[in-house]
Structures are given as C-alpha cells and as structure tokens.
Length: 310
Image (cartoon, rainbow, N blue to C red; front, side):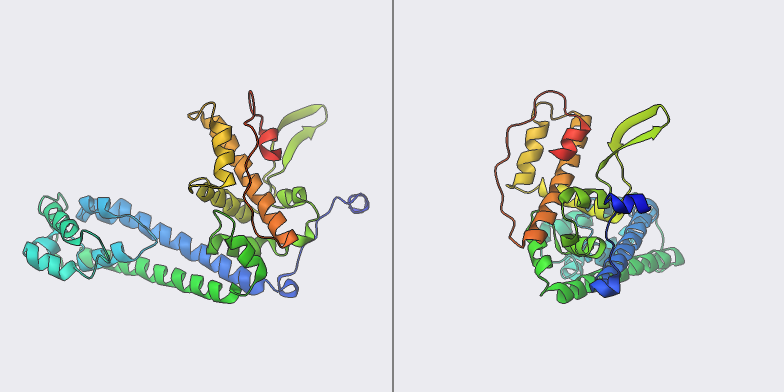
C-alpha cells in the first residue's frame, strides 16, 4: 500500500457529508429502489394478472412512466367490467381516464371491441380475484407517485447546482441520469484526467495475470456499477436522438456492418467512454457541451481497446 501511494496509484474518495452530496445520494438511491420495485410490480401484472383476466389490453400499453394505463386497469380490470356498459356509456365513463389523446373516441371504441372478443377468464368484477388485481394495481400507482415525488424533490434540490445544469445540456442526460452522476461520482474535478474517471467506474482495460499466464485484455468492471450503468443508458438515449456527436460516432463505427452484434457492442462501449469523457470535461472546465463532427470511421477490425480509447 505504501508503494502504491508513492507511485500515485490511488484514488481520492469523498465523504458524502463533507462533500455535501449526502442528500443527493439518498434521493438517487431511493429513486433507484422505488423504480426497481415499480418494475417488479409491472412484471407481475404483465406475466400473471393480464394473461389471466385481460390479455388483449397489453397492446394498448405504451409509456410505463405514466399512470394512465394503471388508472384504466383500476377502473376497468376485466373485459366484463367494460362489456356490462354500452359502447357509448363506456366511452363516456373512460373519457377522462385515458388522458389526452388525439383520436380518443376511436381508441376507446377499439378497446370496447377488444373487450367483447377477449379470451380472459370470466371472473366477477367484484370477486376476490379482481380485488387482489386491484390491490397490485394500487401498489404500482403508489410507487409511481413516490417516484414522481422524488424526481420533483431532486429537481428542487439541484435547480441551482451549476454542475447539474451543465450535465443537463449533454445529449442523453436527463434529470435522473444527472442526479445519479452527481450522487455516485461526487465532485468530478478531483479526477485530474478522464482516464482516472474511467477507472473509477470500471471502464478501463485490465488483463488477468498469474505467473506465466496472461489472460485476455477486457473491461475491468471493478468500479461503481450504478455509475457505469447510468452512463451506458445515457449513451443509449443519445444515439437515438436526431443529431449529436454521439450518434455520429455510433453510426461511423457500425457503418461497415450494421448487423454485426460484436461491432455494435464495441460501438456502444465507445459511446459510453465518450459520454464519460464529455461529462468529465464539461464539469472540470465549467463550459457548456459543444457538439463537434466526428473523424473518419475506423478501418478494419475494431479491437475493444480502440473502442474504449477512441
């Protein structure tokens, strides 16, 4: 350990209270726990309750972040709760439940016809089975309200934070990604070089060695897993936006073989590393994100090391 300290092979860690990020960490970790719990409840609904009682309604589910789908299920959990009404009465009863839609009458009419031909179990809408279904739906809606409240609290807490504002201007980084980066990385200015930041969350290259054995060089993944996942997801969002340098870089990497899974994986690794470098540079310099044109596409086979260092 003394030798590692002498040669500078060490990292500077921050105490949350001293660094002033304890509240940010609690918001971030609680949001993560609530989101995972909501996803678990959603999977329970999709794999158990809907296949039994209303399997056809799943095709009307779109954005899992919204409460509208669960609100509709809470009001109409089975096809029988819909078909007991006339089509006009159902449209009037569900008009305010489905939210703002362009063709709301056509959508509700489609749901009504779907309910008439449903293969769901003909259970009583007031029976114990449907009561348990509604209980789980209420749990999902409660978790959504908790998640939304945490996001509002995070936005209020960080609205005057300069680093938060800089991160929000980077493509792919929304409020929760910015919150997680600040919570898990702390003050990025303590990393004198972006390679230290890459190593902090495990996107550096490492080779397993033992005696004369030398393993394959690959990503170490010995760092902060939540931060690594957040930057990976931010890169995924960025390459799906219309125009930015992250998408340009991704398109250049996969241009020669768009259906090559290994090439796409390496391209996503390169995008994650680029996202980390941009985050570090923006916070360290205090300048806004400025997009730029990528260079020429790599020629020949792309090794993992080049994808990380590109």
